[in-house]
Length: 211
Image 1 (cartoon, one colour):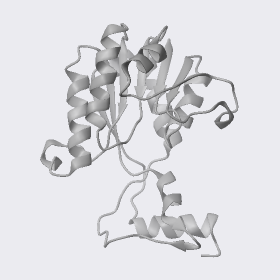
Image 2 (cartoon, rainbow, N blue to C red; image 1 turned 120 degrees about the vertical axis):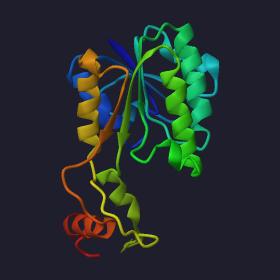
Image 3 (tube, one colour; image 1 turned 60 degrees about the vertical axis):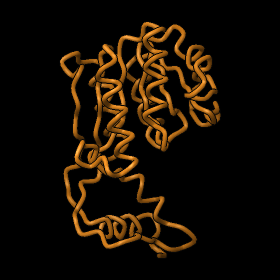
Image 4 (cartoon, rainbow, N blue to C red; image 1 turned 90 degrees about the vertical axis):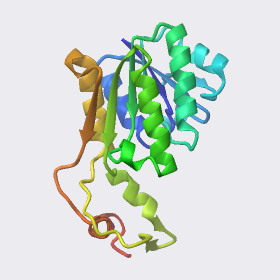
């Protein structure tokens, strides 16, 4: 199976590209900014915009499946264009990285609303799909460290079960290999719960002991 990874330059893309490659899948990359130097191996790369249909058509040529890992305010419109193009290009499987808080009752929040709508577009497309709703990623802790300070904004009272991007990538590839996972939505959580402050302190103790 040949998989097009859309959003290949993003935080969650590199691990899934590695795991697809390791498990014998052919991989093609699509992003506005992705470059060969970002990876240890020379992959087939198409640079383009998800809102440009001709870019998507070029990227989907010879592909069987599309893995979508993007994050933008107009995400549902981007997914709509991806699905329309996938139907014309005879794509047989779509996978999509959503979020653990993506539920209909949370649609008051614009990002959640966009991801919810994107999920519905995929489910109603008629193409087989796998949707992942992961919680916070361990990798996001590094984004909270700037200029020698570790900062959390707001008073976060509920613990989260952080998950590693590499673990999600492994689960994604396993789902591709197991057709019983098709047309299902999976919640992904890590094995331990921490307040973000606790998790950030643990991260800094290891990576930034000077903070």
